[in-house]
Image 1 (cartoon, rainbow, N blue to C red):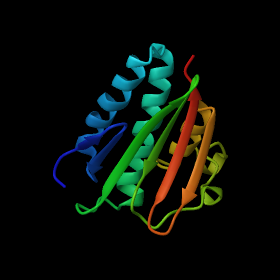
Image 2: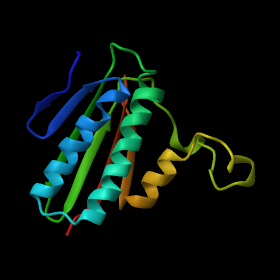
Image 3: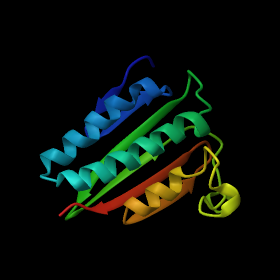
Image 4: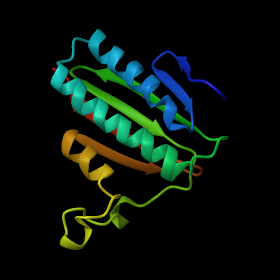
Length: 140
């Protein structure tokens, strides 16, 4: 795959950070269509960007053969977004607490923490080949 592919409420991108803007535009466009407040769009956009970047770098190890799939859906006043990679998975319980003194100056390890602070719900599923992280937030 050499460019993003959109099908309905899903965008699939090559495992390359240059396609992050395509994901942002896709997600933000859908949220705007639903009349979502700019502050909520910002929280979701930050979270999705972090998760997609993690999927590219940590999940797919930036493999040019890997893809990241992002789906968005709305149920009532709640939006749920799934970000899926094709990597080997991870255990979120094994991530160092970024607030501990010994981790404050580390350059990595804050992504999931940031996402958890901005979203109402975060669910990590490791399935065979890949990880899917689902995030949910009230949009009204």
